[in-house]
Length: 225
Picture 1 (cartoon, rainbow, N blue to C red):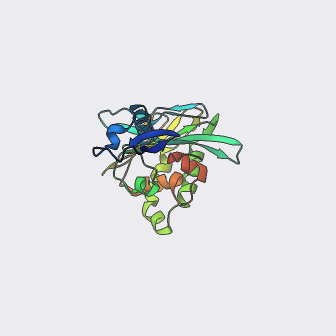
Picture 2 (cartoon, helix red, strand yellow):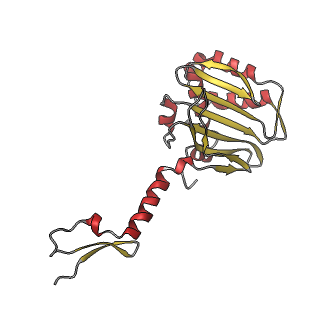
Picture 3 (tube, rainbow, N blue to C red):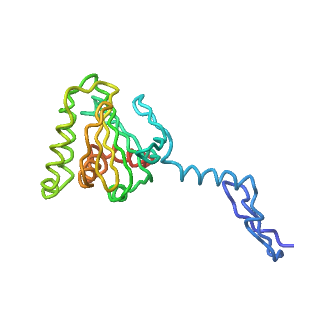
């Protein structure tokens, strides 16, 4: 009798195939001990974006639970923003309804999205932070786009007053078909209507000229960065 052919999986037979057996079925012949690890690996890949993360001792949960205003949001990625590779300024986190590693897909999608800025500096002027965001924003949009959202930028800048201290947060939450709700240090400041402003804000992190390439990849949840 001919020796059955064997497909190898990590050095061990995955299933056997016998030419004399007319009812060969790879699934039936597969070892259950091999099926379980394979399924576990597949589930890990599918759910990779939804894992909690800790960046510079700042913890971000895997999800933001739904409430009366927002649906459940999943952590897409988190990253540390440094200046001159020496000064830790903030940790950013991006939450989405549907996590993705595609910057274009995230920007174009009509879903709830939240950008969180967790301040690490002991004390920083809120206006200084907003000005830094503004400078990074204009690097990622055209002059025409800048003109279109200039009034929105001015509104955003007006929301940032006083100082922010270590541990406080600012967030930008996009609500489909409405606009961007801005919250600073736990206080809702207002809603900037439309989608264009939030698209521009996202490009600060995941646009063609992000704060850093490493930061962008970590926000996108791309491994090996």
